[in-house]
Length: 403
Image 1 (tube, rainbow, N blue to C red):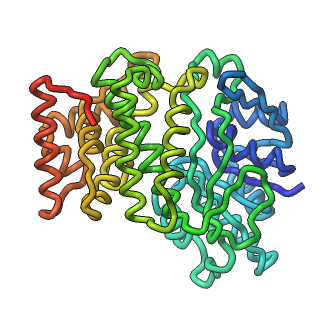
Image 2 (cartoon, one colour):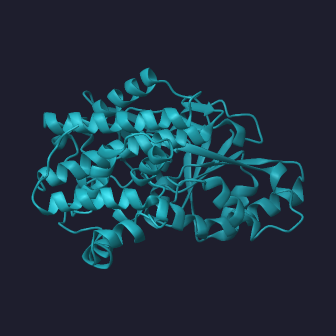
């Protein structure tokens, strides 16, 4: 069997990447530091993905095993003997796994100096390939031919995987809930080897456009729903609840369409209004999936990241300003995000959101716009002023949903 070595046995790793490759005949070797998950993978050699929708389905994922991430010798061996790699550990996790990946590359090079290896980067991180390349170069020999031997394949992860309740995880440590959507968009140009024959892979020539589509349509729509929903009713628990309010649903759709027109201006040869409108309507229907149980908290939390300059809302606003296109709906949702204080099932805010509240929000909206949203140039002052006007309106109790 061909072997995928997958760093990260989390929700995306198990429900999406590992599942796709396993079902196409690959052995999947998970690398993770969570001992209990690794032990259970090695005991059972399989796990279940529970598909949440109108009809619940179960996908049994076979041909799996695990290696503990702290066993660096064993991990390097798996990298050296892999047919393909994938990483799904988050940006902070990447800095910890890259040294051992580099060690695996060095071992691989010593046994076969022409054997290229591709890395599928299943991370919600813009310019991920550049980041990983720069990190790898810190640990590889100066004469290592990285351009020939390392394929850095960026992806656009569209699959929605909710936070699972503690009870569900205690029932089965390996099971994971997910929606039925099962298409992995990835960068065709990033591969050094032929694109794997794996059902569900959708290689694209202009990957940057598709990464931006994910950020400025899917992620944006999610954030708008969460922030508008929380402003409307802070007791909403699930993301489908705000969308049951007709005015909110219309605002979300109109805002996603506003961003779609911005994307079309940025990538005129990649998208059409028809294709993006169909994508938006499909996404909203997926957001409304009650069986998925996705929460307002999960979708909206981590304000320091989600309100930052290049992320889902601010990135779309700046792109809209660049093309002199309207972005008022997006800006309104961004400022509503300043007031987002949702909590998890234990009633606890994300620590980074507590940091946002104490270190940024309490210093005033202009401090947030400059230091969190990254509006630092004089040419962006118009955006700051418009946002401050929206904030003043919200402070005066005038939360108005309109398009």
